Image 1: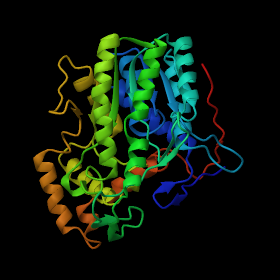
Image 2: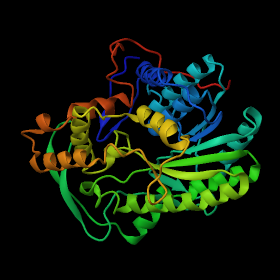
Image 3: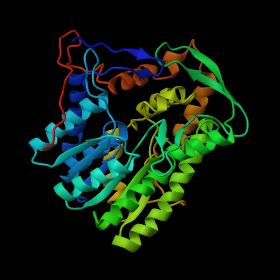
Image 4: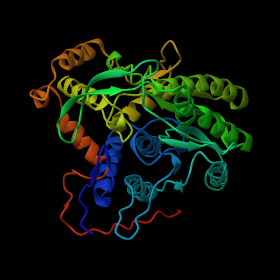
Length: 395
């Protein structure tokens, strides 16, 4: 099959196996080029196949030399349809990790369900015995509650009043004004149910009860705050309400883990990056395009793998981990530097369709988006016939 990108709105509906494998290999090489870390040797990553979750797994395996189990929900290839990018990413990761003699096992299924939690616990007992780090990096638009059976759907909306501001179509470069109506109380409730901390808490409670968390085990989940430009649609909107719930859950889990195994829980606030999730949020692609321009000019730009190495090396497993006043790890610190945000604010006021390519790094945004799906990777022949059926196997 010759595989070219198929873009629909803010998503790509196919993926390239060789391109995905190459970008996984690039992340592995980056970690291998860094000093080895002292830290966990048995790691569970929930939401392990793309973005920060994938980078977390790569950094743990090739930075710590950790055995890993990954949980995700991805699609295999079938008939004339490619597998999802996360499927190909995982296949490439597992092959590379096993070549280094590491345990690399995966479970593909609904991580919100009790069944997948119990399957994961059984696999931990079989392959690792216990884990000493649990990374929670799930991103999903829907969640079915495992106890009640209610299905929730998240929305990306402001709270209280409508929000209007500039946005960009990152594929066409069209700059326009978008207006987003306020969320209803039920939409807020459902978004918190999908993206808040309840499922993370369910995971940690089940792992504790099963006795598969090692002495001193830590868990980390990911969040974002961002600049005031995006507050109405993000931190002060439905997503922000969910992140508040996630951060409150971290405090509860921190106490529970300290009491049970002498461990802890923390939220890491990460940098704005191109992900499938961020591409769906109005205003955010334009902000990220401006941010990339400023941070690249200053030599401060990071991708997911650079962020995860810095999280592990300088924060989570540092001798004295630095946290903010709310107890959160901040690896968005370079993004939120005063000089960076001042320049982004200035560009935001000037931006229009006429100067977009001059003031913003829209090409960088677009390239990063395509790379999520294995496209635009140097050295890959996208005119060649490739085999889309790539297996995931147990080691």
